Amino acid sequence: MTEKNPLADPRLAAFEEKISNDQRIEPKDWMPDAFRKNVLRQMSQHAHSEVIGMQPEGNWITRAPTLYRKIVLLAKIQDEGGHGLYLYSAAETLGTSREEMVQALHDGKAKYASIFNYPSLTWADIGMIGWLVDGAAIVNQVSLQRTSYGPYSRAMIRICKEESFHQRQGYEATMVLARGSAEQKAMAQDSLNRWWWPSMMMFGPHDSESAHSGQSMKWKLKRESNDVLRQRFVDQTVPQAEFIGLKIPDPDLKWNEERGSYDFGEIDWDEFMQVISGNGPCNRQRLQHSIRAQEDGQWVRDAMHAYELKRQAREVA
Amino acid sequence: MNQHSLPLFEVFIRSKRGLDHRHVGSLHAEDPAQALDYARDVYLRRSEGVSVWVVRSSDITASQESDMASFCDPMDDKPYRHATHFKLPKEVDNM
Image 1 (cartoon, rainbow over the protein chains, first blue to last red):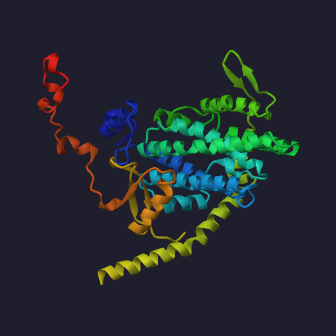
Image 2 (cartoon, each protein chain N blue to C red):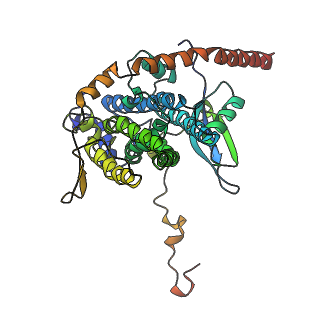
């Protein structure tokens, strides 16, 4: 059966009617293969991002400046692991297993947010990741609460409830540095200089260049375009930077009275392409660490499984 | 990665006494006891509830939305089952 002509397949017509009526698609509903592939790619990429994203922050747990900052950071990283689980579970409703998804990540076949291929060099980077990276993620995730795939939408609603703490703790940590000694302020500014552009890249290519955007918008998997979301992020973040006296590293940034928005400079798309194709500063390290963590935990899973088999055998006997 | 697939469990949480348990998500675990531990770690980090159920997903029998027409008659031809069907005089209409 062809999927081109809705008249040829009543299931496709029913699917498209649900989409146009703003209804959610649920796991057991019929859906076109391309929709299934597209939403699976998006959810698995999102899940991997949550899990890989724990690494640059984990780097600073043992070196957090105070016990308070350390417990906050631990709680945040624990949330990220939970967010990964919500998203993997949502993706599994499409019939792919957790093992397959993790294997695809470790084989380099599945992507994750390229921002996590940048290193966290100073303590200021932890505040910056919360403020900018989680800030950019929230802009995207708030929009995705209305995505057309039901399990994805519900995972996003749950994640957004928790994510606001992440951004606020990051901004607060940055604010403390920006109002501290000259060295502390310089450290915060240096960190902003390094994280600003990668954060801007998180929204992906321009709408005109984006490989999957058009179809995803048509299916309401994405509800707003990359450029619209990026503009929203800029407009909300610039005043926050000004408030704590940090300067966004973009000479072209200026308020556009007519648009009621900030104009900003062009992203270095060559750098973007380099990082997503595996040549960012930390790509190899992130994957190797993830593989090692998986392998190091194998004995725990083996032991739990052996115990379960023993328990079952005892029940039968 | 060499690993068998762990069974899937559905998680239900009662947010406070007097309310129903509500489905919140799912997770993999070896057995129900471990599923309960995982549910606590993942779904109850901010006092989201006072009670958790975990149920093996394979133990749930579900209807199909597409079969509802033949499976379940919505009884739309029996409007008298709804309170609004009965028109009462304005003097007693808050019944």
